[in-house]
Image 1 (tube, helix red, strand yellow):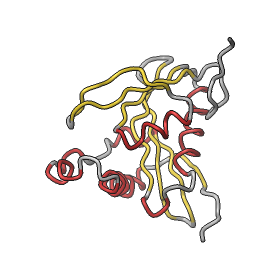
Image 2 (image 1 turned 180 degrees about the horizontal axis):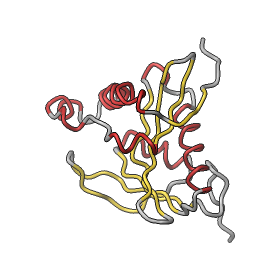
Image 3 (image 1 turned 30 degrees about the horizontal axis):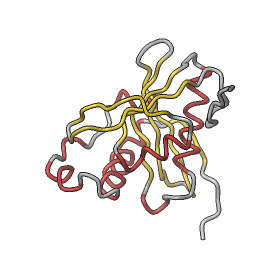
Length: 163
């Protein structure tokens, strides 16, 4: 059984094809909107300009996951993608990537992260301190909207409120 910890690094243009493959693999593996995804292959794809805002996780030299966080203003950013190779699910790789992305975002002045998530990943984000804040329409119907204030908490930690 694999016990190595992944190495996290900034994505490069050379990773582009692998990131798109991971996006497709992970999206189809959830089973959510499976047929719609197959019928609409144009939904897969990573904009080249988003690579600079992405981190990758490598195990044994192979990229097994990535996380993209896009700034939307001086202090707000959007978690655009967290995709992990299904062969390495449930090993904490997505958590590690998002915590590191959150840490880097906070260092650059970001105070709030947002994400629009399908049902399969809502509990993942909630476990990392994101709170439901509404619903948003997507190409595949309504999805949950979650936000997290990161300015005053340690990355990956749930903010505790007094009282």
